Length: 120
Image (cartoon, rainbow, N blue to C red):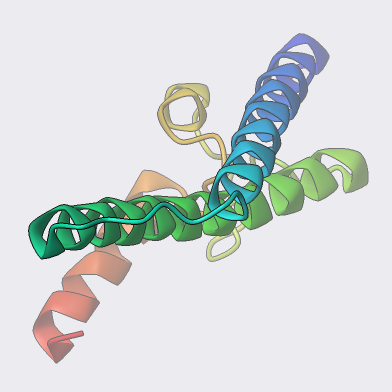
């Protein structure tokens, strides 16, 4: 992979990581603020539902943060853009669509087909 492509992905991933970390900090401070009192049980249920939804989103973002950090590690050790399954180069277009990917489209498709067959 060309150096300019690697630099592009490093900058992209670093920027996204910083955005996610800022959002996570905001969520922590919002959820640790004083609890509101709700005289109506429906309002309380709605608040809890929104809070649970936010927590699910943050959990997904936490998993994405881990993947971004691993992708940045691969950039540093020179293995970014190399498929972990077949060791072929992952296409730049695939990396633009999913910069944290570890497999080329061919290997990922095979994996998904196998999961479908096995019912995973």
